[in-house]
Image (tube, rainbow, N blue to C red; front, side):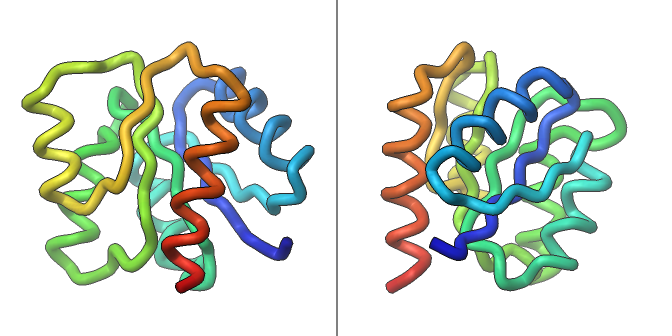
Length: 125
């Protein structure tokens, strides 16, 4: 496939679960543990196809990271938010900052894979 996906989550377990599902489907994974590192990884991987990002993280949360990147014109890839949060105001803030999808944890691997395939296809057009 050749698609690189950035997984940004402060939970090593979640990063591992997401990576297992996606590497099994042929995706290459790059990980980051919070929004500060995530922003750096996004900037350093301009050829990535997608970022999957948590909302609640230390140092810089996912929505704040998106807002920072979008404000600087550095958000050029689709972002799927993967979080325990389901508040409509957060979902709206994330969409306004450029998020293309929202999935609530715990996730079903088949649902995650379907969402990733859909968003990667959008990026490939």
